[in-house]
Image 1 (cartoon, one colour):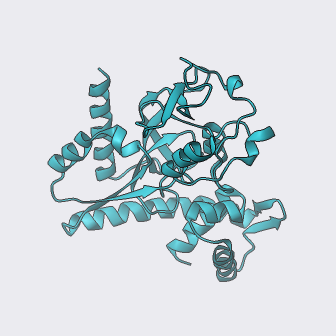
Image 2 (tube, rainbow, N blue to C red; image 1 turned 60 degrees about the vertical axis):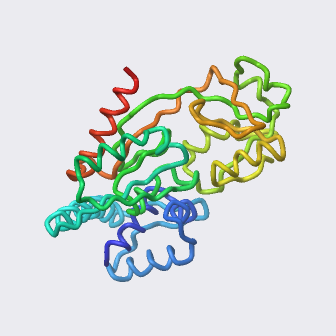
Length: 289
């Protein structure tokens, strides 16, 4: 039993589905299934009840899930403390789409001034993973947007932005001052791949029934924009985002605000993560005032 196996198990336990867990971990399903089988063999216990619709935790699985989450959180703290003690502290920041740009370049400068000896690494995630790799243990802290499943993740809001529908400039609705979701009924919306967080997908990709289901599947912001340009597909995006020539964004008045957040795994972040979050909050607060 190792930390990677525990990380895999926690993903399956929280997603209740091997396919969704594999997508969250950015891996294929067969090796994930084999890893869980090996873990069950090592422990001599059945951890999951499997069915065509998904999985459920057994009594043994419930015990392991609670302990595994604690172990993974403690391992993250231990890694940070050891790195700091050796003078080789690192911080890996996950970003999503426009999140780093919206947080502003001053965030990087302010963090470097406070922590000049820290090796900062940045990992940009695609739109299938709004946690930017937090659940998979690929990053320490994330700049991202909600809504998504925040189980086991602490989220601190930095700013809330209005949302608009992205349209081609020659679209009949492009000249409207504002729109409502009802105005977009019957249009083709871009979709995210199967296994994407359902809260996240439902927010950004419009209705899940009717004509919307035939829209193209996209993974990145550029793919979203190209889908609008080439096929007249529509989708939502923060009004704060800049758009290329030929596209416009019209405010959608009945959409909840898009919340830019800083997030980390667990409830008690290490000192570098705490410092990063404090700097981000202070800078975004000063921008808003």
